Length: 292
Image (cartoon, rainbow, N blue to C red; front, side, top):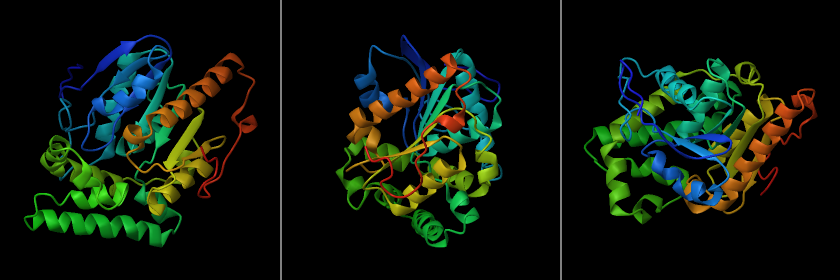
C-alpha cells in the first residue's frame, strides 16, 4: 500500500528480475493480471496496482474534476515506489493512463506496452468520425440507461469490447463488481473523452513501445491503437489472432510473450545506447499488421 495525503494507492509486488508495472483497466484490480503473471513467473518482478476507485485505491476525481491527470499522478507514485528500470504495461483504460505517464516524463520508464487503450479523442483528432461515433454512441446509450434506472447498463460497454454476450458469460461475482463500480467507470469515460491526445504529444515518447490489439476486437479500438503505433517512432503494432479486448484473461500466453519481447527490445537498447528508435522495426495501423 502507498499512503498519500490524497488517498491510499494499491501496491503489491512479488518475484525478481526486470520490473513489470502491470496496470489493469476499468472495473478491475491488479488481480486481473494473474493469468499473465503465471506464464511469466520466475522471470520478472511484478508490481500491480488498481486504478482510482477500484480495489483499495481511493478515488481522487469527481464529476467536476474528471481529469485523467489524477490517474497519471497515482500511477507515477506506483512507478516511483517500484524504482529502477520499470517496464510499464497497461490494459484498456490502464493503457490510456500509462500513455499519459509516458508522455509526461515525470518518472523514468524503460519501455511501454499498451493493450487496447480507449482513445476516442485521438480518433477525433484524426477525423476518424465513424470510429469515434462508435465509442460515442455506446457511451451515450450506456450512460442514459444507467441514469434511467438500469443497474446493469454497464453490460453495454462490456459487450462493446468483448462481443455480444460477454457480460452474461462472466461469473456472477465479476458481474457484480462491474455493476458496483459503474459510477467509477463513468468517470473513466469522462477522462477518456476530455483529455486531448494528439500525435505530436505521443511522438514525445522515446522508449520502446509495443501496441497490442485482438484480432476479434471492435474495429474502433483497433483503429485508435493503430494510430498510437504510427504516432510513436519505432513502435510496434501486434494483433493476437482470435483474441478480443479481455485478452489478458483469455490469451495470457500470447500477451505474456509480446510483453517479454518488448522488454527484451528495451534491455537491448539500454545495453546499446547507440541503438536509436529509428533502427527498430515498425508496424503500421492496418488491421492484422504484425499478426501474432
